[in-house]
Image (cartoon, rainbow, N blue to C red; front, side, top):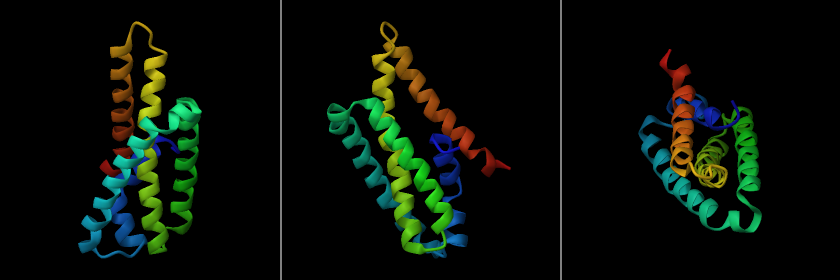
Length: 139
């Protein structure tokens, strides 16, 4: 639960978490969610365009997964503090999007002759993570 599915599970509960644990007002939820989208977009661009050339997609994916795992633990530990909760929310979501590009590159590098199937498999994996992560919210 410390990878993609962990982020999706946490993200399924972001509104009740930010309201009930962190103490934000419901009227602030839009302001909490909007900057995260920009941060996520930027992190995905950086992980796809800048970092893999220097260190390789496998190392970027492993480091990003490590950041996600630590961030999820820190959210659990410091969720009652507004500033920490907000900063960790952005880091967690940015990590999820930053992980996408290196994993897609690894899939394409290792799917010789089946690049289209490999690319589709990457999207299926992220959608599956989203579905599995949201299961607790459905009950």
